[in-house]
Figure 1 (cartoon, rainbow, N blue to C red):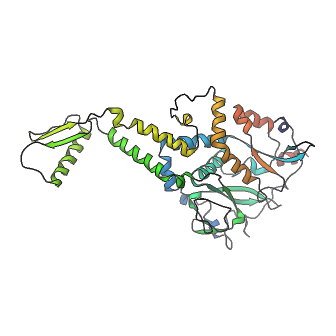
Figure 2: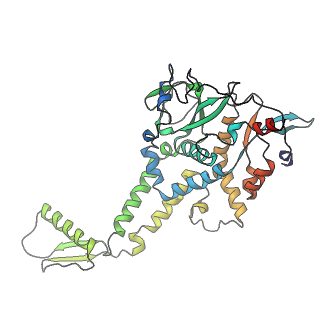
Figure 3: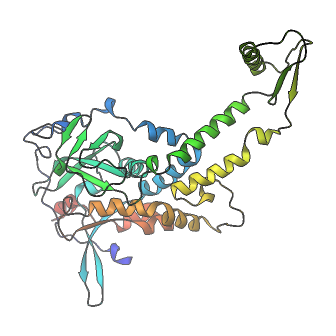
Length: 372
């Protein structure tokens, strides 16, 4: 889109002033007020958690790989602003000087960080939250901080499918003013509630593989061939002692009354290679990424270049989340009516997004003001 090489220097927001904290009567950031008591817990990072369900899913290698791939796409693409004008045939995008927060959403962290973790919340929980920490003189947001979705409760929606932005938000036990929270609602249900059995199966499979890999002696049957018959508890103790011994020794010792018969299981069967491959395919389906991108063999399917793999990752994995983030940031509670935000997708697909960002990104409002 060559028209993004042009720069529109029209001011789209008043200068950033010494605004009060969002939704409060205090000048200090995150100050609580009225029904916004939960704001006192914003930024108290030692209380922040990502959730047990999310952490369990991330222990599955395929889920972790899929999450990291899509997060790398969302985090690497710069945001740009535009409006639309009718040129006689169609609506044409006209670039605008970005608001200050567009290049530094949260002043304490890079955009790559907050955008990647915003996707993380959308991916696992189906929604994400930014708290508005300051506003410009015109009342629009000037800076944000991310709230972990695992710590947010909505009293008017129980989930796991979200129907609209919540009007009753609880964060870390305190209520938040919904006008001070930007709510991202994913078009895809979060995987922590979408297929819990598949994730649980993958975890149990990994546990079984670890158990089988922890001994060099194949599984088998320990059998008593003589002597006084042992009861159930004695047999259990004997098997437990034998297992403990073979964990640390390559040679097992048995008396004349015991025999050990190995199973005919081969090493690849002991490590459940085929089962692991199938479960990895299931996890790729769950995460909506092409299987070959997470290292799963798919037979005859192949790609010819890295550009095609980037296109597949964008089309099948990242686009829904990127459109969710850009669409939410284009709403009237974030930007003036008729102003929109989008990701620089072309730069990512071409593999030279850093260079395109320097050439195509319009000047910021502050830079425009300094030149005028």
